[in-house]
Amino acid sequence: MAEDKKEDVLGRADKYFSRVSSWLSERISAFVAFLFLLFGAGALYATFVIPRLPEYTPYLLAAPFVLALIAYYNRTAATILFAGLLLIFVL
Image (cartoon, rainbow, N blue to C red; front, side, top):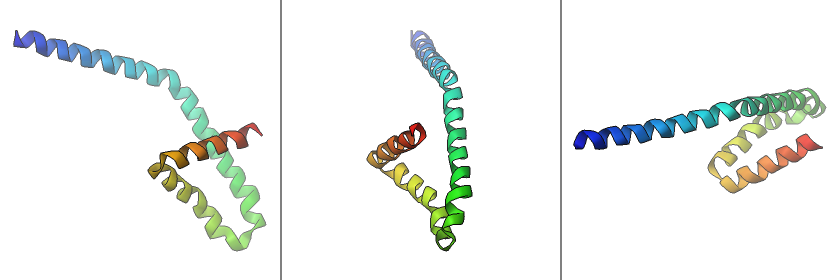
């Protein structure tokens, strides 16, 4: 009887991990594409914005990291920043 429960729990866990892995495999291409878009945006930022304001270079280089920390610790700020990024990409 105890072995049946153990197998049932393992079966549920396997089903759960199977669903999660299929969900991830379906969305991984979009996530990687998004990461490369962000990388490209960073390259454009470094190429066009920073040379125009050389006196603010340390601040301009630190800004994305500071925004990442804020987004990591504050879900509302993350949502607003994400919406802003999408708006920038659309425009």
